[in-house]
Amino acid sequence: MKRDSLLIIEDEPLQREILEDFLKNRGYTVYSAGTIKEAKALLNSKEVNLILLDWRLPDGDGLEFLDYLKEQFSFIPVIMITAFASVEHAVTSMKKGAYHYLAKPINLEELTLIVERALKEFRLTKEVYLLKERLKYLSQSEFKPLEGVIAESAAMKKVLSLVNKIAETQAPVLITGESGTGKEVIAKLVHQLSPRAEGPFIKINCAAIPETLLEAELFGYEKGSFTGATQSKPGLFELAEGGTLFLDEIAEMPPSLQAKLLRVLQDNTFRRLGGLKELKVNIRLITATNRDLHRMIQEGLFREDLFWRLNVINIHLPPLRERREDIVPLTKYFIEKFNQKYGKSIKGLSQEALVALYNHPFPGNVRELENRLERGIILAEGEILTKEDIGFSEDSSQKEPLLEAILKLPLEEAVETLEKHRIKEALEKAKGVKVKAAEILGITERMLRYKIEKYKIGG
Image 1 (tube, helix red, strand yellow):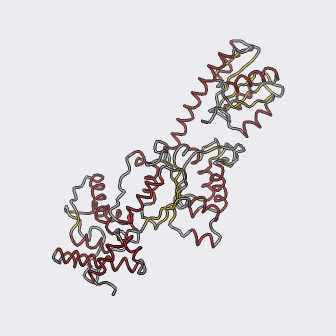
Image 2 (image 1 turned 135 degrees about the vertical axis):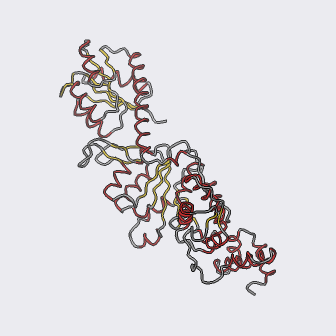
Image 3 (image 1 turned 180 degrees about the horizontal axis):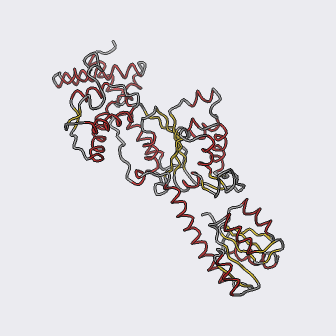
């Protein structure tokens, strides 16, 4: 567990040493300074959760320094200490934002109680602030149980099996696949099945933010670090503390930021823009891309050392055209979803619409299917979606599609025809390797050989 860190600003060496030893023995990390200059240097380089501030210092007035602290480090509670106790001093310091006021000689037991109470309030205040910042990156869907994970096909069952195996680990995950295959859905599933499920799931699309702003979004910035930085702001690494950070379109991250991301992965530390202090981070990183990172490495566009850090676990999502068994269940899911959203009562698709979906190559994958069905439900006049409702024209297919032909056959013949077609398709995709073809079909190699012989496929 991370220990709270305190800063003692006291010019009397003996008093400083007594306080430092006492608080260290109570389990705190303690820094000390004898001047305001030393204190500023420590505040800019160390993470501090509470400050004990002497009223009179060699290079300035403690009360004036309190103004600086409340402006620059507003969350950090400050306890004023002085040998010149008075009601007036107490009132003045409290008005300026001091958490409490103690007179010398300090009662150490009283100090313990005040420090514990101040740190408790500090943690609560910081937690509320971070929660408000996180809400800017969370949509309502993040607060609901994950839905829409459809896995009727052998390919997707294999993906979900891998997700179940790796979710409990802390290893970085790289999700690859064409645009629209559901990479974000799988990233959320990894998070929800992990020990970090109670923590935040923070996502960002690296392609959607200009290079100049992406660094500030990821790492945060200190007040005054650039024009317009009127106050300090935590970045996504801080907001994802204890949870998962999902970087979509990681291939679009500029090389300068790739180097900084590599450092975070190596030692779990980073600095805000304009900051000097090292901040520790405890997150799981999931990244995704639809680009060929191996080719980008060869072209000098992506760091090879970063790739190996990100690609500890690789989850590849197959395109929808390679898992057509998922089309019907996905269609049912999206119809229910959009019926609820738009107050409709669509019961299903016409046979022509279903045939059109089954034979469509889906260059936009699951996202395209979702888009077509949402459009159809909005525009549909009846309870059954037609081919035209989901964006297919009458002449979109020149010849009778396979599924339409199968639907006209007797049941036994239809099953045989479909099995022959799927086996030939799998063998072609596997370049004749039967083990791989059986894997694509979700059956054993023995069963595949039996069916090849039964249907006299390939000779």
